[in-house]
Length: 141
Image (tube, rainbow, N blue to C red; front, side):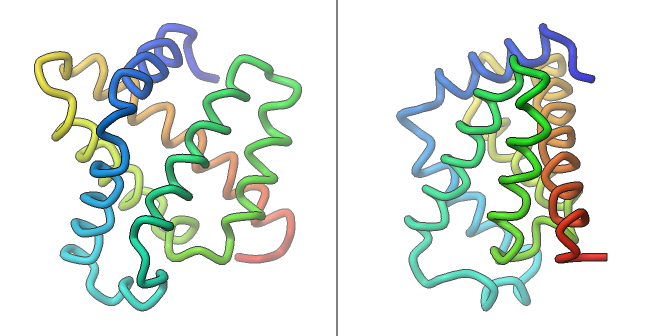
């Protein structure tokens, strides 16, 4: 399980970066396509739509982290809902590492090793919970 402090750090950082998020998630996809060009065809032409989807996913996931009984149901549902979008469920660590890189890039003076570790832990937790939902559905092996 995640520590309350990790959740708090990540939520506060996510809120703080709200104005920059559209640009951040566009940067995420640009970087993803640079690192893994074969992934470009997996996504729609509209990176605005894709960016909005990632932002919404994280917002919903963060809301559920305080409610353990609902948390796994929420993450499993998100996993099933997002199972058709790109590579996240098969390249979990690439996506998590890239998201951490994006938050570090935009984090400014508030970014540090404690926040980096918190982001990494929370994103891995969210992604693993989502992946469990996809596996339970039978969408991936």
